[in-house]
Image 1 (cartoon, rainbow, N blue to C red):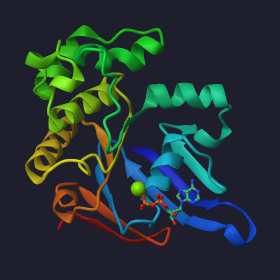
Image 2 (image 1 turned 90 degrees about the vertical axis):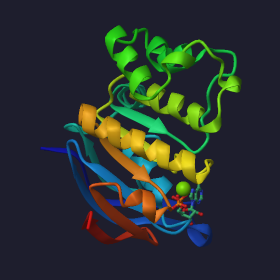
Image 3 (image 1 turned 45 degrees about the vertical axis):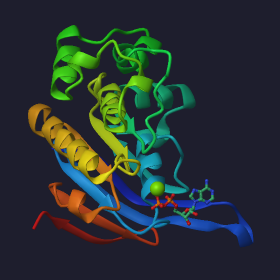
Image 4 (image 1 turned 120 degrees about the vertical axis):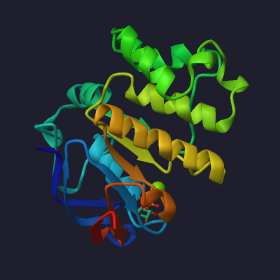
Length: 226
Ligand code: ADP
Ligand code: MG
């Protein structure tokens, strides 16, 4: 069963002489439960693709369907709700609230949505991501790798259909990067989490079920793990 489907996706930034075509006709289907890596040189359109899939930005042309919803037909309020409930986002920078504990940071998106985390799942998340002992710590008391684990837990707390991660290890050293990848793999295995991971690191991408390569806004290769 497919979770994500996009057709003829195109994104042009700016107008006239200054126009930049960041995505030039992307067709992509992601089955539920897949761990997909997206690689490609800087400027090839990886972040743009993630933003269009998350509904953070609108395509110039083409269509995105996630979990049966045509994202392009949503009004801004519906789009914000959709993002909050269906999609989890992780970035290179962790963007944690420095004055809130680990636990509160993780629960925050749900609390803002006037919901509370499922207590059992919160415990499972903390345990899986090795954060149980750190639950009352502040972000400033954690290492970079630990902060990124908090950001991943925050993204997963609402049990999103799709986890989108944009270079989540871009700010970490090799050891911590490998650890984050292992944890993403664990979330994929334990909960069947569908993951779309953008990375420029081929070693990390090789852990995914499938790797697509972008170049100048097009998919130039699409292959299962070899
Ligand atoms: P990647 O994440 O692979 O490095 P991006 O999706 O960030 O690539 O960028 C793809 C292209 O679109 C690049 O040429 C970039 O300069 C351009 N671009 C990205 N965001 C914007 C924007 N907000 N305004 C204008 N051009 C942009
Ligand atoms: Mg990028």
